[in-house]
Length: 318
Image (cartoon, rainbow, N blue to C red; front, side, top):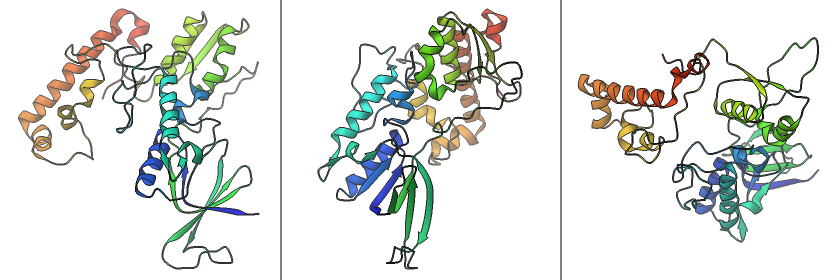
C-alpha cells in the first residue's frame, strides 16, 4: 500500500479547519496540506447536508465571518441573523478563492474521507517506515477508504458536533424511528410530511431542540419535549430584537469590549479594567447590576410567565 506525504494534515473541513488551513498557508504557501472531511460537503455544522428548514445563524452578520472577507448581506436575513445556507455558501466561496501555490483550500479538501486511525512516530520516517529517533515527529493517518497519509504536523478540527450521541431506549412494544438533529436536514421533510407520524418526542434543551420543536409543531405534529430535571435546564435563548434598544440586536451587547471585561474569561489580560470589575466591591456591584439587568430584560422579552408550560423553559440559573 502506498502512502502519501503532506507537510500538514487537518482533520475536519468546518470553519475552524478552513481558517487553520488559510492561516498556515499564508505563512507557508508552498506547503503540502490536506484537509480530511468525513462529510460529502465542507462546512462542518454549516454543511449543506446538515442545514434543516428554518436553520439560522446564532451570531449576526459581522460576527460570523472571517476577518479578511466580510460576509455579504442577504435579503433573507432577520435582525442581521442570516440563514444557514448563506453561511455555507460563504464558506464554500472562502475556500475556493483562497489560492496558494496554484491550489485553493477547496482543492485540498478530501471529502467523504473518515479518519479511522492516527499513529505518532517519534522522529521523521526512515526507509523502514518507522521513526528514526531524531528531533521531530511523524504522524501516520489511516482513513476508511484504505488510504495511508503521512505528515509532520497534524491539526484536529473536528469540533464537538461531529459524532451524535443517541441514548439507549428500551422500547418493548414497537421500534419508533429515532432521529438525531445531525440528520434533521436529511430526514426532516419525511417526518413532517408523513401522515403516520403524528407524535414526536424531542429530547434535550439546546438550540437544535428548540428548532426541532418549532419545526414539528409548525408541521401540525403533537410534540412532547423532554428535558432532564438534573442539570441547568433548557438553554437560555435571547430574543433577536434589540435588548437594550440602543444595540442593533441582542447579540451585539455581548460582543463589546466593555462586556468582555465583565465576563469571566481566562483569555482576558489582567489589566486595570479586569481588576476593577472582578476584584473591587464597586466593580463587582457594577458587574452584577449589568448582568442582572440584561437577564431581566431578556426574561421579560421571552415572556416565560405567559403559561405554565412556558415557565418550564426558564433557564435554571445558579
